[in-house]
Length: 412
Image (cartoon, rainbow, N blue to C red; front, side):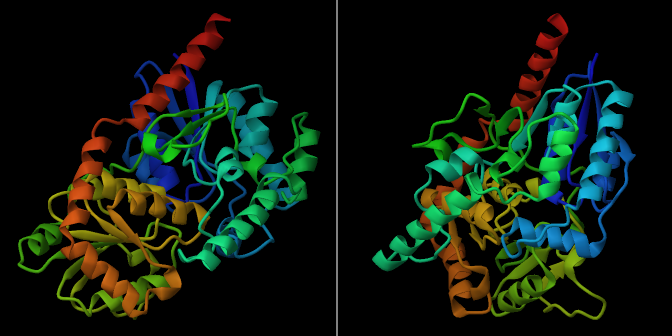
């Protein structure tokens, strides 16, 4: 028996649920322990029956927004001060020793790259392929500039080249990660790419997403991993699905914002559809949504297949993969390069359309939703993707790789 320590960023919904799915797939012979700093989605961990250790220092609301802005490229300043990084590394090293962890599994909790390596414990990262070092290094167009005309393509290649240098070569990582890493006897983190790379990187994508790419030896494809929340769908979903109007799912994950949620709801009100929308966490008291938009709490979206006719998504890998696995064609925004890439992969398969988030209030967005609802070719493509997803189990494959590494270490 061994302990596997999971360290998600617990205000990131997709990341937290991805860790839960991998923990569920572990053999009962192993013990999964979770730790984290913020509290937003901790209830999903404890509701799933896992041991959770609340840790400090946590970020304030302002620091969390700063982290999201840094992640999405809207700001160069990060909340990773030297004091915070030092404190979190100390807490994590102590937790690894206390639990006698044989492996650490992370989301985007960057300080774990220092703490796990300082403790000599193998570090695993179930990660989308987009924005990994190999993806950025080998991609000629990151879709940083929209459009398919010659000028747009040229501009995007230039922007991608600049982004590649900034991401993989420029020493732009917060200085705290270099100084604290050195102080803990491990390799400094200097580039953005180095802040997103574990000892074993478990790439959570379908085979076609790697066409034309070569993976380094410390990367391996495991397949999709997305949330399968406990519980049943609320009654309102079944009631809306039984009505003659199409039913649209509005899923914006945890990295969108109030303005986008309200704008999308307002535009969907102009269509003869009903909408189920787990966006309550973005709304403020007094916010009004149109009568055809039914706001719910988080729901088990993997059960929406056969009930929902189309989806509108922010582009996070979890929501995109859930739509793919349930055969639901969708319109995606893409709020940062990784999310844009997730949507574009599906555009290429024919089961999605992409609309820039700044266009959500324009006719382009409503026209895209209409097409997703009405185009039989998109529905056929969504069904084909769904059949392919049914053959994949990224959580089980991740667990297998982690367990094999633990067993090999025990024999050594």
